[in-house]
Length: 319
Image (cartoon, rainbow, N blue to C red; front, top):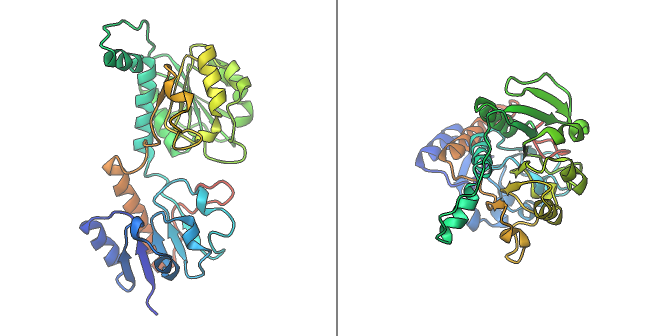
């Protein structure tokens, strides 16, 4: 019986040719996410792309599910996928896009460009005072996955001293000057000029940045979050910014998302907000990587080989 492959990501004709060649003995259907039906999802043996989790309903037909995202939060909830379904993500596709966005935010804070943009909107020719530099700065990278490592390499290349924080001890990567485990983070927070958070969404990371941890930071410290918004409560971040516990922050993620229009975070002068767009398909390179991963794993599914980026249901990220 012919197997069904359902592709929901916005592939072009060249991508379709690659997929069709790999799955030449299968029925391949390309359906935009906005046009999906429960029937098409239920009939699929393979899905490439993020479909609404409630549509899957632990389908027994679904053998292999390739996400377009690195995060897998909605799909690791018990009852969404059948136990026989192999779930893979697109870890590795977003490294460049998210890390470069985070570097841009870091430099924006260091050079006070957000204040100059505000002044421009008010037609004010105003000197905003002293700035800082990556050269000689101590940068703390919270989460040493592939995005954290990419960010660390860029900042180290710019002259920063980089401290990496991860859950388990390991050999120190070349892009890291000092490596500590999460249980020792409080000992290094007071040394950091920049804290870059790329923490995943786990039980141990929700509310990780407490009032106590912000009090450990330098008054001149800069906080950049491109991981998960729930790593810091809005009220806690707002208090740290208003009280001068830290100098400024930039967040590509918030809790909740979208951030409500009446949230006081929008009006906080020393906070830069971008609407969770550091990843996505904004950088063409990212989408090409996603297609590469999907094609590789589709081939592995057909050949009965080991997959790339199999998701760990405990962490929601690749094993």
